[in-house]
Image (cartoon, rainbow, N blue to C red; front, side, top):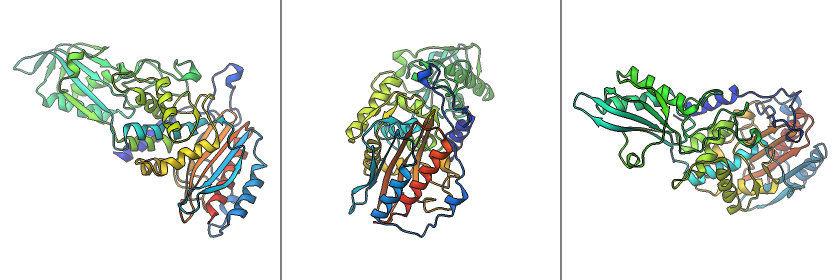
Length: 433
């Protein structure tokens, strides 16, 4: 199940349009939609790959090397490196660490941390089928089926087959009515702030009920209902009516569902969000944060919940969405590190740590820092939108973890920014207290 979600997320991320590095597109200030830059793996240079993994450096050497590298970064950049080892908790390097910067996809760190805290690493999102009407002895339902979404971003073919199988096994062989798609767990705003909450070319439409990652046209819930009807047909269950959007009557919600299917764990979804930097999954998780106690999930509500969790951990963030597409998502390097440090001791800390790409191995760091001291030793989240490049995460130091946040704004060359980040991370990986 976990592998399936990871592959789905990677495919979805690769399917999302990205802007060529040479042409990052207009900025939000210019009045156009803020376009995401490439947030995919980029092979490190041979010079970096030759960095000796066995060479170790001490605190003063690390500080000197990071100071030299920081001078090459754009002026609107901030850095914070902290030794989180139990015996050595101390700042290793800082520069403009308290000034807020645009986060890009480092926003996903806050979103997934809050989701793991609020929904639980082992939590799951449920999609159910409810029946309305009278059932007679020959398997006919004189009424409708409601397909009720819970905000599961992973709902796909296998889940529809399972729901259809459970409906058929319940004794229903014919539905003299319609399939009503209930997406009311979320609001019906399909986009995020950078698209005015309308459809965006950089993220599939958001909905409380989606199918196969949603689509770029049409209504997500309606498409899910059509898929359900097709799955029922294959199980020999005929539905005479069509599909339509509809809210489940309150009296039905208290009943045991006719069929149900659960998502992979929130830990698996967080991993499928962070490793390939999946914008759609991040935004769905953010809405789900607010969908509790009868409230509809909203982007603004989820952002508020994420901010509150961050603040409870000593970190500050101004958050507008879940993915980092909007340039209004801002935090400072020190706050990012504080969140990361807090997650080390969190009950979902292992899941959070495991959700991040490993340098030189997987996700958006697949081909970065290969063959260096950082490869296999550091996990970090990348981030790229117009004029922004970021990298924040952890490196094993032998006696604990070093936590870092490298937030670069005013970036003119993504390649140059990533090279600086890679060199800094390699030096951090070489550090031994």
